[in-house]
Image 1 (cartoon, rainbow over the protein chains, first blue to last red):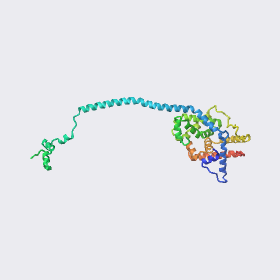
Image 2 (image 1 turned 30 degrees about the vertical axis):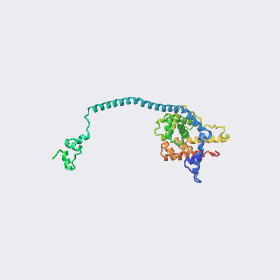
Image 3 (image 1 turned 180 degrees about the vertical axis):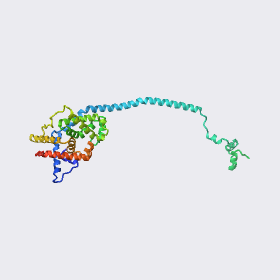
Image 4 (image 1 turned 90 degrees about the vertical axis):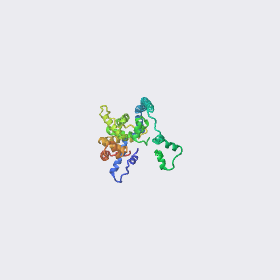
Length: 150
Length: 185
């Protein structure tokens, strides 16, 4: 990066004319380029980068291996815990199914809606309704249902 | 890969993705070198420290709590590594920034000028405090903004500006004593 580019990146514009301080500052900055090894050694930073990458290759490989192993370990851990959990679930399911069957056998017969509705209604009234002999008068019908036959 | 944030690159590098780590190296190799140079002051040692810091950073990547601030974390490693290097008894002496250049480099006369200026600059930089060297190199050599430096070095922006001001002033004084400084470069 040359000085102009660096100035642009740093958001610095040209100093006002006659501003010797700013001018000297620019000179200092320009002079500092000399301590940049890339200034006098072409390709220095490319070599620097290559050296670092070469020296860190082993560690990067170790990290890749570790990442792969950790994924395998997670999957293996899951499979290890999956088998006992599945077995326990099967036992629980078998127990629940068994108790359901016993409950069904022991339980009283279920209520039927029609029986509930027909409870405490006189047989004569039911036969009349089934036979189509229903009085047209509601009062007479209620009397028939309640067994108050005149 | 260039569009990826530091946090994304760090996450992928943790899983061993070389391309992501390579991009991080590409982004921060120059600032890392500048910080190392500001602490050590010698090219060869600064290069070693910066390169070793990348190795250490990769090894400890899981310890980087805030991957979005990878740069500050990395530069702290560089700084510590460089200080440790200085402390070592075996630290090499006298291998200032080598003047050797490639065959396609400048003419011998120009190379001598550059070498002399480099020596003068190194001397001038050595008069600054470590933090001033670091800031002036990151700002004036790497083009980092005040806010970037403040965030990555963990100090207020005003402090960065202040350090930069005094560092430049000191450098100007040092370099102005050298009458031909910068001429023809």
